[in-house]
Length: 296
Ligand code: NDP
Image 1 (tube, helix red, strand yellow):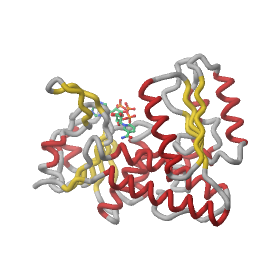
Image 2: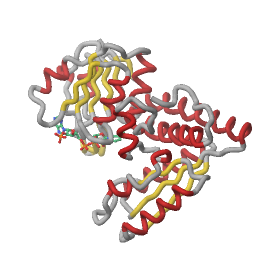
Image 3: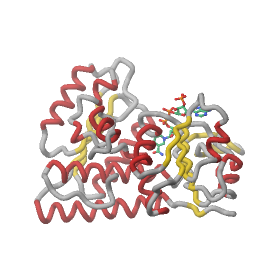
Image 4: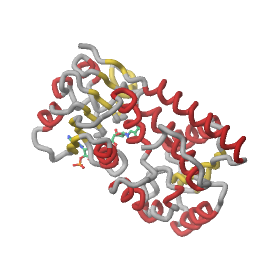
């Protein structure tokens, strides 16, 4: 068997176009333009790339984009004061603080200082609680992108056996909540799971979010399963730098029914979902109808 490739790049382009269409309508009908503020503390090169790309995509979707670049030695109190100003600014519908923050700043304190209604990353404890109790929340972008791809591929996920490998607050746990919300039978595996291979082989839906290059081989995949590979790992092979996932793509693609590639799978969906969340936050703040298919 050779798996269908789930093309995240193409899907993300569709989501971005859909967001742009809604933004144009919002603007024309209500004179409202969604706006996203991204805060970067320090000059981590990977974070710089992400922030630039988020800003560019936001503008391309017709939204306002603001970047707040602060020096690495910024005091926690000054960062909190900026968050306070952004919370109070009605033109700002989404606030994203790029992680990781420098060691002297308490990330939890900063994230929980963001107005939950503007927390487009979905990391505020209120949003975590809302998601966990099945209420309307801002949902973390990466798992939201995975859910959209799964729904697009399968329609209903009800009754499917889903296994997520990884239990981080950013990916693993919210992914499990979303799959549970769509009535999957959910298992969360992690570094202490016994017989991980056997657990993975049960999965109709296998979501890998570990951060270990190609650790899941094809013989851990149930024939016909859908494999979502969240991992982004930089390795050197044949003298070249390469990006690979947490799943061994070559062997898994021979067994799975469908699989996301790395790169070009989950990655592009993450930014698309950030735009979708900013649009959703804007609609909610103005009491306007939310666009369909762009939320959990
Ligand atoms: P974390 O490091 O926070 O979490 C990794 C999880 O994997 C932990 O729960 C850990 O278990 C588990 N784990 C580690 N080793 C093993 C093992 N040998 N067997 C089973 N489980 C294991 O990572 P993130 O969730 O933040 O990210 C995961 C991956 O996804 C990374 O490659 C990251 O780069 C990528 N990523 C991609 C995004 C995208 O846009 N595509 C966005 C976010 C992340 P334990 O808790 O027991 O330590």
